Length: 200
Image (cartoon, rainbow, N blue to C red; front, side, top):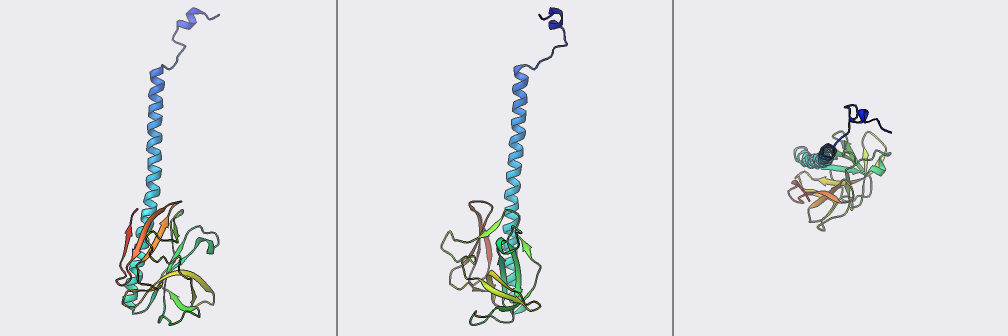
């Protein structure tokens, strides 16, 4: 039996239904803000990655024109890099572009490796039937200071800033993904070598 004096005293406190509903609304709003912030930071990371890739292609084109030499934008798959989980991108220069690609190309690296952001991958395929360097034959590169031969997917600019590899007449398209769907397309004009990003 409950003592009536004890039941009516102020020692027993409970939440009212309104207070519980208010607390649930506040928790729901905090969760909503937290989830949108996480999704926004993922999108921002992918967008920064695409902007950096556009900058790398622009840098390669500029170097080719200034140095009057072919510049190779080398893309190395995550599976080829001891479990790093990101695509590596590097710039290489060479004296001249060969007529045949039978032997490994003697090159010199002109910058340090750049890595895509975690979870962002450069993938093959094409949305518009354009040439994707990930679908073209790999080039074999050998640095002049090293005897190791690397296999890379590549885009090569000639001394006029035009794309000479992969061969073709269409622009080159590089696709990035942060999951199961294509996030962004980067297109590089064949004759002008100008690079621009298309958002989906």
